[in-house]
Every structure is written in structure tokens, then in C-alpha cells.
Image 1 (cartoon, chains in turn yellow, green, orange, blue):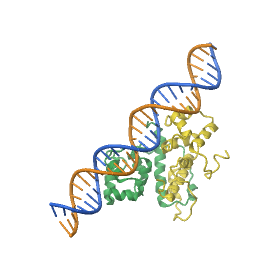
Image 2 (cartoon, rainbow over the protein chains, first blue to last red):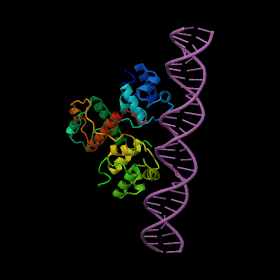
Image 3 (cartoon, rainbow over the protein chains, first blue to last red):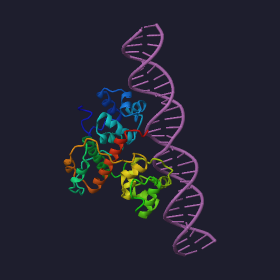
Image 4 (cartoon, chains in turn green, blue, red, orange):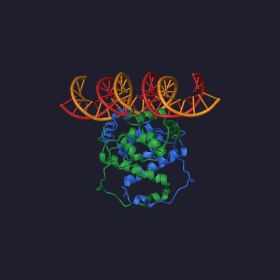
Length: 132
Length: 132
DNA sequence: CCCATTCGCTTAGGAGAACAAGCATGCTTG
DNA sequence: CAAGCATGCTTGTTCTCCTAAGCGAATGGG
């Protein structure tokens, strides 16, 4: 758990490497993951992803995998190159809005995903489409 | 503003119709939108989308458009068929977590997008992968 | 030993997104 | 009218995801 899940600073690890190691860590086979995602990700396709044959799996697929493995969605989005490596920033104009989500009665799971998505949003904003 | 932005209940409007009407409402040309998205969406491609030649523009593209037009991301994701038409539900186990996002100092824009994304998450959960 | 199953993996192919280039029309000016 | 430009749209092509089908190797039972 040290090296791989450590930090986003590790520039060397690929999406395939990461996902493969996670799957082995969870003790799952390709076909078990396929079942776990409710057929959203086929075993064959997962194999391609793990061996870096697929350059950018769709957010859909990554989302399904992140839920099966219970890993950070934003992180693998980053590994997949969908977003640029979120650097911590601090000079935007924010506002102190807090109570909004009181109405939403968040599940803990939803809470986690929202936080991940916020990370995703912010990295998008700050990199401003230089990806192409 | 009545018919189109009215409610998600309107089943007849297509993604193309909606986006086209919004663009005209904003008084923008195809190429202006192309510029506005920082070339993320070409004018030719936008034309195809507006004429329903493209069935499912990627979340990337939809996100870019939602920002240029300042419209609801979750709504056009829904129109595009990426998510199922979020029906209000109420028997999940939630918890009263509220304060989490106090640390995040949300921008109003971020707040809006998070809410949209929450909608997206919940519709995904409740439809449980019958999309395929 | 043979059969069945399961594993990871490869390959071929369909499908559809996305773009670049170009066309057709209409509107302004000279 | 002709030249020029902007706008919306069509066409041809490229690229890549993703699936279906299947292969060789490993394992286990009869």
C-alpha cells in the first residue's frame, strides 16, 4: 500500500500497472471484476487496460472500476490522462457556502465521490484545456 | 424560457434541439462557441450535435458546452442519455453529514456543479446498470 | 491419461466520436 | 453584378473505444 497508493507525485506508474496491482491486491480475477461491474467492463477489455493497450478508458468505465475496487476516482482519471495533475492552488475567490449540502443528506459514499469530483473539477479549471 | 428550460419532465426535446435553442438564445455562432470552448468543440461537430447526428457526445464535450452556455450539466447529460432521468427517491440510508464541504470553500460555480453531479450519481445508483 | 474448467491474453472487427476541409447560401460593400 | 466575408452544414477520413470469439497454459477430477 505504500508505493502505489502513496501519492500523486509518483509519475512513473501507469494506469494499467496501478489497476492490475489493485486487482491482485483485492484477490480478484478479471472475470470477477467483470461481474462486479455488472458487465460494464468485460474481462477482455480490462486485460487490455491493465496492459496499457487502451490509452483512455471512458469515465464510465473508470467510475465502475473505482467503485468495485473502492479507490479514488479522481486519481485514476488523472492516471488515464483525462485530467491534468491537480496542483494545490489558493487564490481563487471562494465563498463560505457550507449549508447547501445539508439538504442533500449525503451518504458517506456519495460524500467521498463528491469530494473526488470536486478535485476533478478544480484540476480542470486550473489547467484550462491545454490537454489537446 | 418556459418550454425548454422548464422541467425534466418534457420528454420530447432532444439534445440537439435544446443546445441549438440555447445557442441562439445566447446569440452565438457555431464558431464563437468553438472559440468559447477553447477549441474543445469544433463548429462542425457542434453542428452535427445540434442536428442529432451524434448520439452521445462525450461527457468532456458536454461539460465544455455547459460551461460556455452556463447551463445545467446534469440535464444535458440526461438528454444525451448518459444517465437515466433521475427520479426523486427517498428510502436510502443517508447520514447527516454536512460540514465536510466547509473545508472546501466552494465557489458558487463549483457548488452548482457538485449539485448537478450529485444528481448524476444518484440516478446512476438507482437505475443500477440496466443501461446496457 | 483425458476432460472440463478457469485463468490471462490476443485478435479482428464494428461502432461511433471527432476533426479538417470544403460547399452553399446570404449579406454587405464597392 | 462581383468580390468578400460570415454562417451553417455536409462529407470524407481518422482514431480509438469496446466487444465477441477464441487461444494456450495451468489446475483438478474421473
